[in-house]
Length: 297
Image 1 (tube, rainbow, N blue to C red):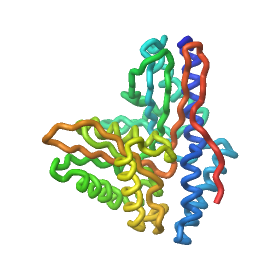
Image 2 (image 1 turned 30 degrees about the horizontal axis):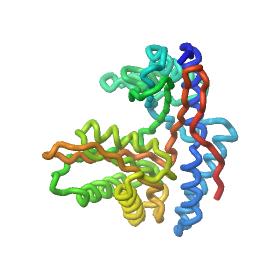
Image 3 (image 1 turned 90 degrees about the vertical axis):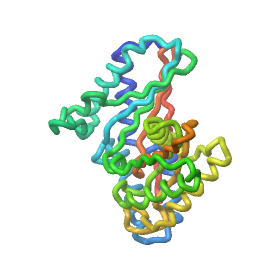
């Protein structure tokens, strides 16, 4: 990878702006489809307002939501990629620049002093998750996540004897408890197994998967469908005002677990599931991977 620090910063800045201004096309399509199928007049009105908001953000080139979230970057780094030591600094500088130029709401606060850094950076913010892969390219994904959806995250250390039945109950209980707080319709990321930390990371990474990509494992794909159908029977509905559209989709990922523990984590995203990815090749070529498009109802 031959990009210098300034070029890396430019790519990261573009990703941040794309993520907070444009909603990925798979999310728009899901909201548009839900709008056509919603039987509640109030629920349908909320979905129409969401789509109008998305279109206005694109037209005016402003963030979709005033809560531009806390930024997390997921990096897939090729073992032969160069200049990886420059990347984290570039991500921080891109975050500072985006705070001023996009703009982003300052959302980085010291947990002890309550002092806001003012530029969305601070200790371990933005957070960077590294994954080592083969090859000489680097793929960067930015995931701005708002406080409303983050606040209802759930982690349960279930009894192994509860099995999949207990998993389903835990996820649905989390949806009911969350209610209107995460600005439904939501997307659910469910992480199963590993330890407490692994389960939550799996859950959050599951939110990065496009809604139109089915799980390769047919049993897990069936579980995801069942979770969505059950969640949509709660009648929480769009913005918690009632209706059949509480959840737009669910993705489940897993790791093997210790025989004595059964961790299950649920990460929520509000309807504004904002994400953007780019791949930087060894010759410095940049390919922006996230598709955008307009939605109407």
